[in-house]
Image 1 (tube, rainbow, N blue to C red):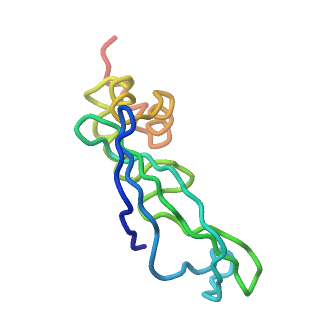
Image 2 (cartoon, rainbow, N blue to C red):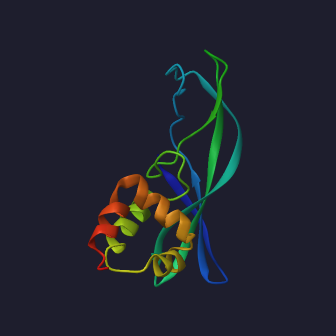
Length: 137
């Protein structure tokens, strides 16, 4: 999905990038029909890879659609954000890459996420167990 950058702000210790989804309408995820109409928007906060040691948050404006075929309403998905996570895939990859050599608290501080979120991500991917086995007693 194409996006348009709307601006950048610094808020305390984090950088906020404002972007809006544009381009083709998304097909209905229920029935696959392309007969959809737009009827609203929402702003979704998504954590992204840190920049210069500071957390980055994407404020993404996504469009809401209603399917003319089945009547379901849905928001378009944000490319590069997997499942129900509120982080980009590249942030998840960065965390998995940093985890073997850094403390979870350091990663959490730099990414703006909680230590529990870091652990949950690594647990879900199986990286948490590999890390625990590598640590000396």
